[in-house]
Length: 161
Image 1 (cartoon, one colour):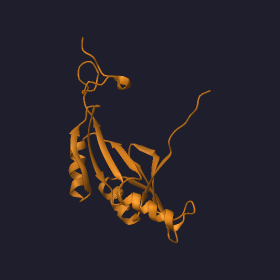
Image 2 (cartoon, one colour; image 1 turned 90 degrees about the horizontal axis):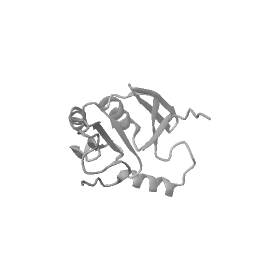
Image 3 (cartoon, one colour; image 1 turned 60 degrees about the vertical axis):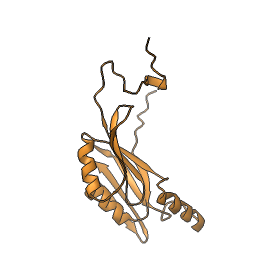
Image 4 (cartoon, one colour; image 1 turned 120 degrees about the vertical axis):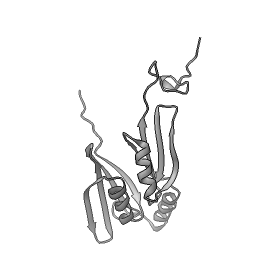
């Protein structure tokens, strides 16, 4: 039996929807798909130009959704402030150019662009709420098709004879 399973939404939590809107729309150039408000409840969805069917849902701490105690809201806010709730990883054609654009926005820098042993050049920032946002670019494969760093597929060490 063939299963047509596809990812439709991924979620991140924020404490300030306006700051998230400015970051994801204005800095990353994502498309706003939905901006829903009902009293204190607000959520936003964004998509990328290359994946319009996949929506990133931005939701507020403890507003809407499941009922949450004040203690749980505080715990969630504390984890968010530490950057421990959510992360997004985007693939890009030019990580260095995007790095400069995001850095110019004033976003908190976590890692400058660097080549990784697993075959990407990447960098990382925090969004205004503290969520980690990584950007990576696939590096050209060296002769033999293996990522550098001595790792073969499956995490096994590559042994030279």
